[in-house]
Length: 233
Image (cartoon, rainbow, N blue to C red):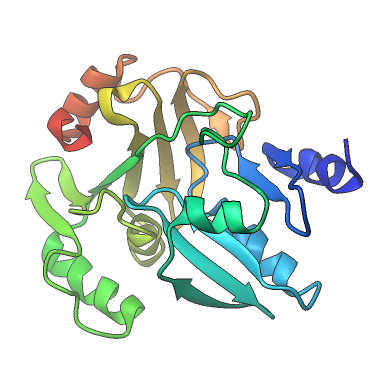
């Protein structure tokens, strides 16, 4: 294992894939850790002169970003074509011997104690502009505010709402279609405090709980949170 792999292994569950040329891939193995690649790419771009690329896998299609000196730029390229051109095919492609499946993750949140009328100005302030129609799907329910998106990814809206409404409890659900991989993070005051995962995570970042709202099965947890299961299909 390389020194870089050993160093990363101490902090985050990453897999190092050595490329055939100047570039290598650092692949997050925790599907619930959305955004970890972006944070790592930003930090690595400050260490040298070469461009660093990150791929946001929570979106479908995946979003490619390049980083230089901590600044990002969205690239209009196919992620697999880019990886091949850099001599480092992505895991799960025909040119790669690695086999992690390419899964489309969906992210939905429930914010207890918050309504859409309160959340919209906060999200617009964070974005610095009025919300683009269709960017978020905000629904007031008897259990709280549901935050979803037509793209399947709400970005950091759940964290923003949690930070700005510290009295609220926010449940963020990240899951694959069919709910085979199912993760729930509970936030208060912008900070994650507890997590639930099926299958269980090898390296949990927060205190692990065995149930959400008294439920253990993904379908029943979604029902308890008032989140339609079909939003993950």
